[in-house]
Amino acid sequence: MRTKFIVTNVSRLKAKYGTKYSRVEKAIQQLIDADAARAITSTVWDVSSTARMKEAGGTKVTRSRDPQQNKDAIDAIFQHGQPDYLMILGSVDVIPHQDLANPLLGIDDDLDEFAWGDLPYACEHPYSTDVKDFRATTRVVGRVPDLTGAKDPKHLVKVLGVAATWVPLAPKHYDDYFALSTESWQESTKLSIERIFGRNKNIHISPTAGPRWNNGELDPLPHFINCHGDTGRMMFWGENADATDQPESHRTTLVRNKIGRGTVAAVECCYGAELYKPGTSTSDKEHGICQEYLHGEAYAFFGSTTIAYGPANEMEAADIICAAFLQHVRAGDSTGLAALKARQDFVKEAKRLSAIEQKTLAQFNLLGDPSVHPVQAGSKATKKTMAKPKGMLGMKSAVHVAEAQPALDDGHRTRRAQLAKRGPRIAAETAAVRAIGIVNSDEADRARAAVEEHGGNATRVVAYEMIPPAVLPKSKAKLKALGMASTNEAVPAPPMRTYLVRAERPKTSVENKGKTKPPRLNTYSVCVVEEQRNGTMKVVQELFAK
Amino acid sequence: MRLRGIVTQRTFAKGSKSERPGVFLETDAGESFLLKRLAANPFHDAQLEELVGKRIEANGEKRAYAFYVRKWRELG
Image (cartoon, rainbow over all chains, first blue to last red; front, side):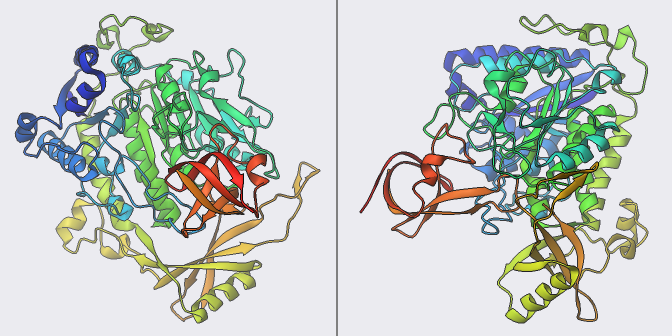
């Protein structure tokens, strides 16, 4: 049997829904019953209950919006039972996101104070606001949100119903995709789609695609969206090649009743997974696209809470973590495991987490029940292993009843144990950087000179200090436990300092298939400059070329 | 709430997916807010762009780094 802990704050849910809370209780019980039919033992843990928190060896949450209290409570619950899945039930006004400090605040006018997210709930490290402390992701976590500020639990009951009635589909159902990109970022989007699906045809480009979709256009179950987003808004926007026009490309009310059951979305847009309260003086009247997808019976929505990062022509940051998520879902992982692996892959691929990568790691979250397996695993399923959840009124039946549930006890404990080791091991191999602010003019000048030698016109210089890996085991036994032969294998000697230098470039036309496109508005890159052992400065990487 | 200040324009969130020419209100109190109008296109708002360089009194609501302006008047 697998185990799922459903963590929520019942006091908050009762405060939101009053007597209608009984409908939520009933929906939770239906989920628990459905999980039992799938050989998953699900248990509700109420962080506002003295008795339950005492049972977990923790302390109940008395200030529901306090990130530290919630982190401490969830850590206690997790350590009490070490569940296979941790499902946070409720939006940010039930269980808050963690308040990770934005490592880019004050740099290049990224004004997000926090990179809100559920990453710390997926890590063993105790409460902290420093993203660098959460490089070792080991827990399978997802959030099934209700609507922030809601008084009627209709939405929550619906998404719990989806969690109770999911059925995996054959891999072929996740072969076709719906991909939507701005024109300005289409080259990057092509790389992401190629990485996920092995081909990159039929990407919808805005302008002129969207926001009105014909019947059938949204039917493919994997969705990949690389557009603009904004806080408190119910739409995404495209952008033309020279970044002078940003038309609407996707809208909550225009995807309503058009999302296919079983859709799994990876969305790079800024604020794409922000769980804002609709209808306030600073937000649209309708909830965000992420909530509409879940209401439309999507199985998962993987997106960002805040301003996200990704280049126009290459794969970096949001591109990498979103692509990894969809790759793992398509390979048959649960959505929660796919999110865990995507985070681990992202840290592993980075090797040295820049401030942008730290924010990316912090801000991308899984919305949806983490135990859902959208794609059938390799093992052959039979009718005997097929989930038979109790009748859920109003759910789409579609083709799902014809599909079978994979066996769920196929060595998952061993694999989970390996993943639990993989997280700390990756953290052991990964350094991170910390902004150190103003540097003396000599340092800045030498960094600029290195960039100019590289061919760019250097402007702004930001200096960073390299923080060594969080976990650096010295004993042979600990190294062996992490699967490493020696510390030399684990940690390359880091340079003393790293500089990010903005390099402006002359506007250039783009040659593509014999046609010359107009020059792009933004023609710059960020060069990573490192001081070498011999004291010289060298450009070692070029990021975010636009 | 009501704020007074000079409207300026500079790049917002450079290098991010939200990069755009942002319209800011530099308040008399020394604070700086990205100006927005609810329901307007956040990337190009001609009405706000017309205010660049002018001193205004704006009514609206502050949320994080943004000021959602409902109405405004130019000051002499």
